[in-house]
Amino acid sequence: MLVSASARAPSSTGLRGDKLTPLSSSRLGTYAVSPGLLEGTPGEAVRHCSAPEDPIIRLSSLYLYLFPGIIKSRDMSRKRHRLVSETSGLKRRQKRGPVESDPLRGERGSARAAVSELMQLFPRGLFEDALPPIVLRSQVYSLVPDRTVADRQLKELQEQGEIRIVQLGFDLDAHGIIFTEDYRTRVLKACDGRPYAGAVQKFLASVLPACGDLSFQQDQMTQTFGFRDSEITHLVNAGVLTVRDAGSWWLAVPGAGRFIKYFVKGRQAVLGMVRKAKYRELLLSELLGRRTPAMVRLGLTYHVHDLIGAQLVDCISTTSGTLLRLPET
Image 1 (cartoon, rainbow, N blue to C red):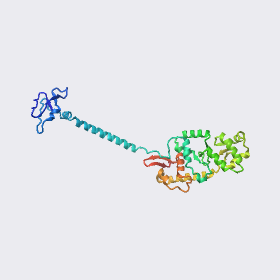
Image 2: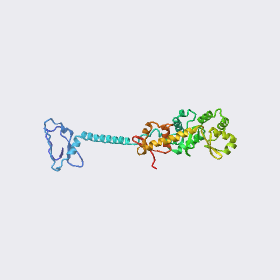
Image 3: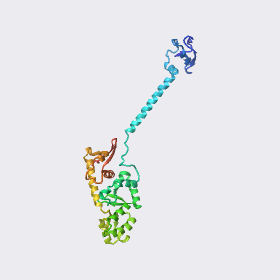
Image 4: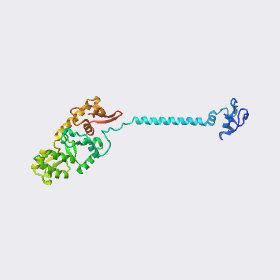
């Protein structure tokens, strides 16, 4: 209700406490009726005054002046609606994000912790506890994806004498990792009462603590550590050394041939399970939930770590979990 200053003031019969308040200093002669205008008795008509100078009546401005609380409440409602919409959109975006990494992949950590964890998967009973628990380097990569970090930490453990690394023979990159104390205990047990026990004990006491290499040269064995050719032959017969080439030998684990046989067959069997699946891909949870084939003597989880770390399968995160897929050839 905007009225001109030149308009006639309303009578006291329809309004109480009539007061005109300037609405804007920029428009001369424009006034707004103060809140007291609404205090008339029920049934009394409110008299409107025309403004001949300005035929356009700005009802919206008067409505904003008379009912500011309604406008404010509407603004607050819009803000709350917008805030709820943005929050809901954020939650939806978060739900569509990548799922949590599978426990088999693990998080970036120490190679020492990874080796200890993987050792728990080794089936000791399968070999009647005659073999020390063996972990492959590729399996460590499945828990420590940064290979440079993993190799550096394994090298440090090797130099400290905590672990021994052996060449398993079925592949140039097939390196087995064994805790030194476990290796010493199992080797002494395997050669107890045998003709070559003396040579083996000498090797464990002199060579093992001083040299952490994967292989040994003839000059090193004879001149540095004082082994005779016959003693070296005893070490080969005991399974502590295997021939690498003329005049050099790999460090070996007595009785590891059966483990290598089981490992190679098990790897091929698990790869075959993925290969036979539709599109040559299989959810990790589905693979681990299946019945273990007879050829997989070392356990599905043990082999899955190898497949992932050796990059024989690709790991893809999906909303349903980790998907194992054979790489395109």
